[in-house]
Image 1 (cartoon, one colour):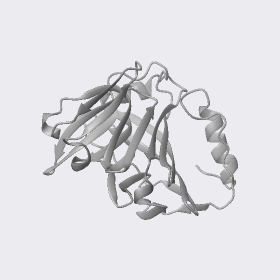
Image 2 (cartoon, rainbow, N blue to C red):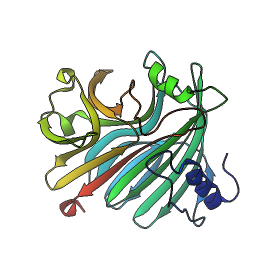
Image 3 (spheres, helix red, strand yellow):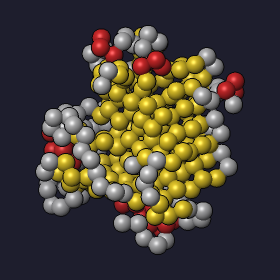
Image 4 (cartoon, rainbow, N blue to C red):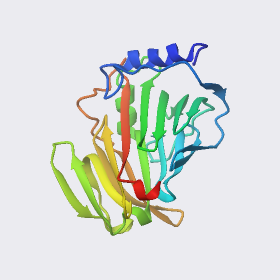
Length: 267
């Protein structure tokens, strides 16, 4: 778990995963200004016009200038039936400065036969929001992470509100480098958008949100739960990216970067 020297410990994380995913080498975290060993209960974060609720290592109700952006953004492990596996109490460290917040969170989740140790780094500012997650199977189970992904799903999930995407044009980028602009139907009518590496949309006039994804092939599904409809962006369960083989001793690394473009009217 996290040690006394916050900066050294965090930088050790990045050294461990360098070469295993899209982020790691070149990141240096200062040890100054951290609130450590915090309770992981909900807390409000703000960086200029960006606001979100931090809870259990994920973000909820992400808004920019009062505009809804995401319902949630989190690392999620699911069992073979698609149900979310509940993790134990985690350890949170938080640093808030003028116009910027940064959080680290780590915990362990047991999901059927798989035990995952995972960590997230969240950085928010008026220009963008970055969410990076790392996960590693505990014990000596060869291919444990890969089996976890194929039996259910373990990875980064972004949930979009119905009103910001349904009936609106979105620009999607695919892992093969191709791109297209499409209009999303109501969630019940959306089969899926597959092999995604990015998606851009305009939730309000004057604001474009460009989401870039790394560490897996992602897909978008339309779903309905508890009478509420939404769009879920998630790793494609049966096809881990060949760039990040999930064998013993390797670390799953996935990242979503949200860039807020031309938001001047909402500042």
